[in-house]
Image 1 (spheres, rainbow, N blue to C red):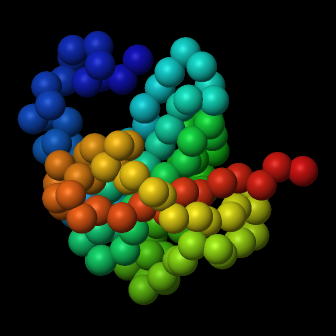
Image 2 (spheres, rainbow, N blue to C red):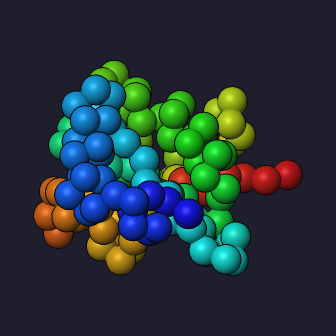
Length: 129
């Protein structure tokens, strides 16, 4: 369970940690667990400041999402990479396909809380053989 969920961190303390990671790296990742692995989702916070859509995965284990985001987010945040819906990319973590999120405010709560309701998202789907 996450430290925020189990009560060992306050929301304020978690926001301070997120802010430090965003300052250091230009982005951070949030994972939201569920007992159903198909409902687990992860997303970035920080790319909206570039400005660029945040990245989002659904049903992808957090470790795989971290590897995917780790390949893409630094290049967006610091390297000027711009990603668009309809793009397929070969990554070390696996091939991915990007689509536009229809309702980013439903999932990207940390990013919306930081950057406002105009946050956009790209759904990163891991293409499995």
